[in-house]
Amino acid sequence: MKVVQADRCTSQLKQKAVKKEFEEQYQKDPKTKEFTVADLFDNDAERCPLTTCELLEKTCTTKATDGLFQIAGASPWKITAQLDQVYGYDKTFCVKCSNQYKDSKSSTVHSATTLVNFKQISVCANAWTQKDPSTIQDKLVMSQPFQEVERMKLGDPFNTYFHTTNSDQCEYTSCKLKTADCVSDYDHLHSKEPNESKTIEMLDRKPYTLEAVVRNPKGYKAEFCVECSNAY
Image 1: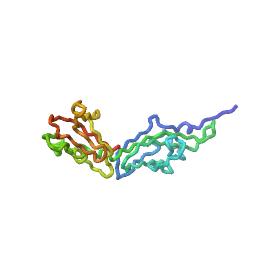
Image 2: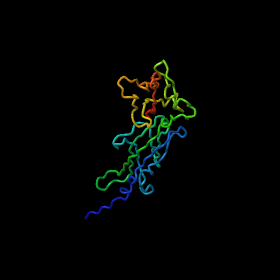
Image 3: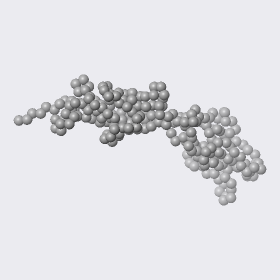
Image 4: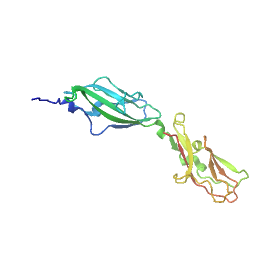
């Protein structure tokens, strides 16, 4: 007769039922977020202490190398995540922990893995805001008489309509003309006549200057939305 008593520690270590997800804002002081493996695993730390923990890529097979996360070499196995990345990041990584107890069937040291998703929001995510309409005055609602010059510059969007707290690091990357509800691409033509001039146009590269026709004897009314992005 062979009697095998399974070591209770081989069943104690397991990932928590709810996987851990973090979403943190950019910050410089302190510049890291700290948590421990106790936030990730269920385990009897007193009777079945962990002996090793490591950070791996999300496949749980190779060591993590991006440098955004670090893990201490001893209990309580503190993990630190960087919060000072200007452009932010959204990473999933694997944490693998083991104790000294072997599985009675395979004779391998018992271990458990879990995936952690960590997102640090870019400082650029809220770097641009619309200017107060009262400071823009007639730049939002313009009434121009017929003129001999064909077109008139309305300025570039970011000097005219938007305000930023961080133009050096969070430079805008694209601008588009949209319909007044900011949903669809703007239809430049104010009539369907084939030779009709475009009323409002935007340069397709920086500084995305806006121009309006001011030599149209019929006159026109154009309502549009300017949508710009810094890609963060």
